[in-house]
Each structure stands twice: as structure tokens, then as C-alpha cells.
Length: 382
Image 1 (cartoon, rainbow, N blue to C red):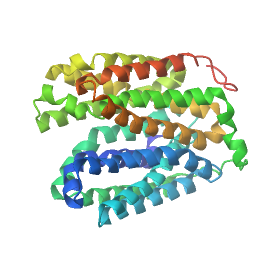
Image 2 (image 1 turned 180 degrees about the vertical axis):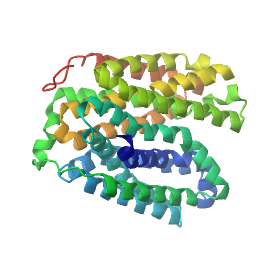
Image 3 (image 1 turned 180 degrees about the horizontal axis):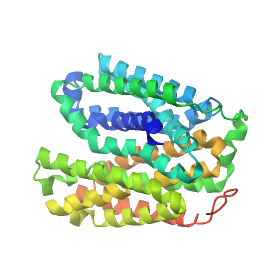
Image 4 (image 1 turned 45 degrees about the vertical axis):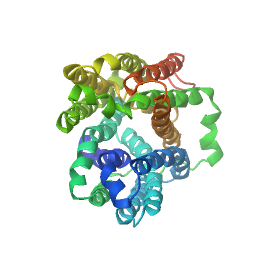
């Protein structure tokens, strides 16, 4: 099963690195494009914002097309965007190129997830989704070290490498994906689930989960400076610990949603996330407690993705690209909103305490998910 899912895994891994690669290159980008550190950081923010806006649109536009064709188009757009970013002569062109690559990337994750779900029998669907989502988890483990390493020779090679990775993924998709085109319902029919309050509550839970998480996590490098003594090596190690745990966590959650109801898995994961955010000020007071915190965080950091993707797919398999796109958009809107909220809250509270308001937002997402313990309309409860 996993062999034919590798191109989909590479696709999501590429998107994960692409979305965060500027973080490890920010000083190099700032110097080369002759802009401030804050302005260079906006290259990450614009990617997340355009991704959030484009995901539902691309999901609707690609839903009548075969999974293979839609994924190849999305990867093609991403390749062009990465190449344009690498060649950008100035900051404005780099910003436009990042926005363009986000449009393609916004379609990659939901289509890859839907393709994985449809490529296996129902009993193994959760494992397939978890394996593909593990590409995003791997990007957490390797994305920042990748940017830091490549930054030694310049930031542009990083985007050429990402373009090459997207090309390899596209070749793999062309060779392995053989799913028939889905039905060609009208756009209005495909968007009809948005009239369902159940779907809207699910999307709000995704948004609040990632807003709460990233209001702290976007600044976790600063929060983790005291326990690591500012050592780049120790800081990289705690990030790698969290990323490695995220790979394990996404895989375990994929197996869990095959055995238990996805909503139950999500509720358990969100409850642990709330606890992790609440104790984050204490955890960042010592080196070993910081390592332990990142390990726990990594294990449950995809509790708002893997089970949620399964719930969306179960709700309406035939509309899954559009619905997965909406959910993916809600996730990235939460990431962008969380970073903005965390920056705003720093005017009143220390960075080390940002986990506390983050916990409150994830707790609201938990309550919303608890309200959906029963199966969605039309879904047979397991």
C-alpha cells in the first residue's frame, strides 16, 4: 500500500517545507533582497494567507477533474512558483511568486489526501491518510534544519531544490495514480454541504485549533531560547524531537481512526493539546522539560488534521477535494491568524505565556468537537 502512496507523501512533504522554509532563511533573504527581517517574514505570511483563500476555490475548481490531472496541475503551478521565487530580482517579485506557488500548494494537500483515501479499501483508509499527512509532519522535523543548512550557500538554491522535489512527485503521480474522474455535479451541488451547520462547525474547530496552536508555536523558538541557552544546536535538536514525534503521531492517529471513530481520536488529541499549552510556561523553564514538551506536542500536533480529514471524507467522499480544500484553508487561516494574534498579544504578555490564550482557543475547538460526537448527517456511525 505504502509504495504507491510515496508520491503523495512527497507532495505533502514539499508543501510543508515550502510553507515554512523562509523561517530558516530569513536573515539571508533579508540581506539579499535588502528588506527588514519583518518584511522578509511576510513572505511566509503571504503564503499562508493565499493558501487559506485559494484552498476552497481550488478544491471546487478541481473537483470534477481526475485526481491525477488535478494533482499534476497543482504540482505544475507549484514548480513554476518555486522557480520564479528562486529567480526573483527583488522583494515584490518574490512576494508575487510566493503567492503564486501557494495557489498550487493549496490544491496539493486536499487532492493528495482524497487520492490516498480512494486508493485503499475503507478499512485501511485512516492509515493511508495518516501516511500522506506524515509528509507534513516530516517537513516539521526537517524544514527548519533544511533552510538553515541551505542558507549557508544562499536562499535561492532552497527553492530550486523544492521545485525539483515537486517535479519528482509529479513524475511519481503520473506513473502511479490511476483513479477514474469523479462525477461531474454542478458547482452548486458540490458546494451544497456548506449549507450544513455541521460542516461549518467542523471548519470553525479546525480554524480555532490552529489559531490557538500557532499563537504560541509561531514564537516557540524565542520561548525555547532560555532552556537551550540560545544554542543553535540545542534549539535544532528540540525542533527535530518535536518533528520526529509528529511523524510518529500522525502515523499512530491514522491507525487509530481505522479502529475508533475519528471524532473520538480528535477529542483525545485536542484534550492533550490544551494541557500541553497550559503547561508550556513551566515546560520552557528547563532543558529536559522542553525536550519532553516538544515530544508530547509533536505526538498530538496533527490531532486537528488526520482525524478531521477522515471526518470530512466520510461526510461526502464524492465532494472530498472541495471539502478537504475548505478544511485545509481553515487550517492555514488558523496558522496565519495564530501568528498575527501571538504578535499582537506580545504587547501585553511575555512570549513565554502565549500558550495560555492558545489553550483557551483550542479548548473552544474541543468543545465544538464534543458537540459533534454523533456522526454527521448521512454518515453511518461506527
